[in-house]
Image 1 (cartoon, one colour):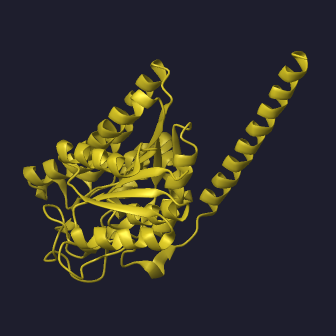
Image 2: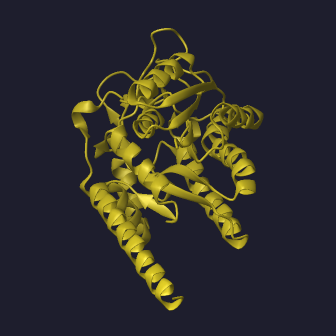
Image 3: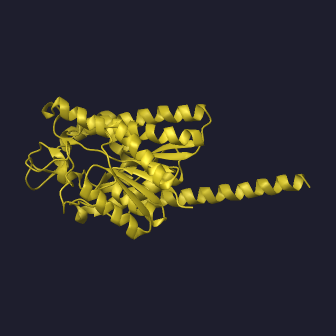
Amino acid sequence: MSKTVVITGASAGVGRAAAKLFARRGANVALIARGEEGLRAAARDVTEAGGKPLPIQADVADYAAVDAAAQQAEDQFGPIDIWVNVAFTSVFAPFTQIEPEEFRRVTEVNYLGFVHGTMAALARMRPRDRGTIVQVGSALGYRSIPLQSAYCGAKHAINGFTESVRCELLHEGSGVRITIVQLPAVNTPQFSWVLSRLPRHPQPVPPIYQPEVAARAVLLAADHPGHKEHWAGASTVATILAQKVAAPLLDRYLARTGYGSQQTGGGGPGRAANLWRPADQAPGRDYGAHGEFDEQSHPHSAQLRATETAARATETAARAAGRVVAAVRGGRNQ
């Protein structure tokens, strides 16, 4: 039976790539985003990959809109099996150059958008005692960097919020699972449309991975939601571990290198930003999953591949152990 998957931020980047991978499994995929053109193209991707799409225009900062989208997905496809929170926006600038309303908007989308998605999902999953919620986090939710204070603050908040919800679900013995996948720098279109006050064009901090790597990590998390979180990419592992043992040294290192590593050649401010309105609203403005950095981006992650292999091995061993236990119990009952 086809699973029903809801993805916020599905019109571009990681959400767009994840939608395509779920569709290859034959899933029904509800696509939530603001931009009409990006949603239309994402729906085509899902259909071509073998899934059934349902594009829904909604701003995740608006809980009523998110809840209505969840209901629309269930009316169309039936009970939601997997909910993936991805949608985000950002401002690239020193904190002192960010306006209060801009910081608030990033927080409403990046943090409250995840809260709203989780609320809408749990309202439907808890009564059925099943379902999986995947939060798409970031290594920057552990180790903040300069020029992205609003984004990093929201990613840290998602970690704390999700831990609290997970504990509550465990307390009530719920069959609903919630997990986080922590991502590395990813080549998404955000660097083409982010609100930036940097003197040069913004870029992800290398090493950069393609969105398909991140999408595979999302599917891994959806398949193994019993784990608290999943790390994707060697740079994510290195960043999180380094933060645990040498945070003060990282402060100084990033103070020295963090500005230059997030900028590349080309112009700075002046481009259309998607903070207040979608950049993919006009006809012909579909951005797709990939950003501008294909040549510098890794299409694979050895670390993620090893994690996937280990997860499959653990799953196989667990099934084998279950069969042994069942056989022993069956023998005792004879």
